[in-house]
Image (cartoon, rainbow over all chains, first blue to last red):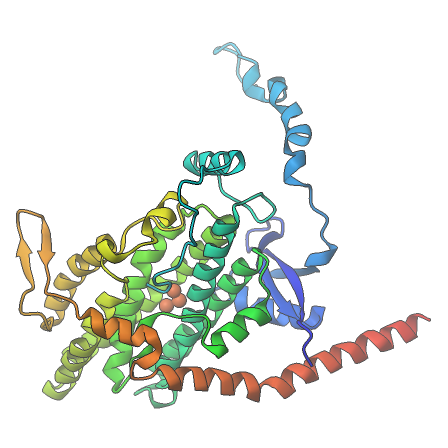
Length: 94
Length: 329
Ligand SMILES: [Fe+2]
Ligand SMILES: [Fe+2]
Ligand SMILES: [Fe+2]
C-alpha cells in the first residue's frame, strides 16, 4: 500500500490566551492522529494549551500575484493610524 | 555540516540571467523572504530540496548513534535526558521534511531516496559510539557544530527553512549543554572515567571538523549558495569558529585536543589547527565509513517493521470515516 498520508497544517494556542498560531505541518491518516502527532512534534516544551489541525488542501490562500491589488490600497490610508493626528502635548488622555 | 557539498546545479556558460532571475536575486539582496508560492529559479528550488532533505536525513539518521545508548544510560536521569534529546532530533527531521515538501517533493520520495542511498546525510553519523562518553562528545561537539551552522540559517532566504531553523536552534542549546554536562561528570570522576572522556574526544575531534565540509578552495557550490543566502558563512569560517569556541571548553574539562599543531595565533586572533585528512572524509561520504551500511540498514528495518502499523492506522481511519458517513445517512 503506497498512499501517502494527508498533509495537515498545525495551529497552536500558547499559554497566554493568544489566538491559535500556525506552527508547521505534518502527515497523518486522520485528524485524531494529526492531533496526537502535533502534540509530540510541536508541544514538547509546554508550547501550547490547545491544538487545531486543518487539512492543507482545505486551505484557500491568496496568490502572490494578487499582492499588489490586495494590499497596496492600504498604503495610502495613513490616517487609519493614530500617529497621523499630532495631538497637543498639554492635552491628556488621547 | 548536516548538509555537505550541496550541488547548486550548472548554469550554462555565458548565459545571462533572465529578467525573472534578476528580479528574484534583487528580492533576496533586499532581504525579502522567498515563500513556497513565489516564483523561484529551478536551480534554487532543486538546490534547496537537496540541502533541506539532506539536513532532514541527518537529523533522522543522527538519532541512531545515540539511540544506541538509551537502554544503557548509567542512570534514570541520564536516560530520560537522552530520550528527550533523541526525540528532539526526530522532531527536527520532521520540521525539515515539511519545509522541503513545500518545494514540491513528497515525503515518500525523500524517504525512498535516503533508503536507496541516492540522498546523503552528514558524514559525522557514520562513526560508531563505542562508549558512554561518546554520547557526551556528540552533544558537545556535533550538536555544538550544528548550532554554529544553523544559527545563521535562521536568516536564510527561504521562509519555511528559516522558520524550521528557528525552532531547531531553540532546542539545540539543550543538546549541547547536556553533552558538556555529561563530560563534566566524567572528567570529575575516576581516572578511568576521565580517560573515557579523553578517548571520546580523540575519536570525535577530527570527524567533527570534517563535518563542516571541504575547504573553501574546493567548495565549488559555495559561491552560488551564498548569493542565494542559503549558506551564510563558508565551511572554513564556520570550522574556525568551532575550533576557537571549543579549545577553552576542552581546557576547562582538563582534556587535550588531539592536534599537535593546535596553537593560538595572536596575529590572526584565532587558533591555528593541523591538517585535516580529507581522504577520510571523502571515503565516508562515498559510503565507506565505519557505519554507513549499518545506519541505512537500521533505518530501512525500522521503516519496514513499522509498515503494518502505518497500514493499521490508515485502516482505522478509513473505518471511522465510513461509520461516520453511515451514521449521517
Ligand atoms: Fe537536531
Ligand atoms: Fe541539526
Ligand atoms: Fe541536536
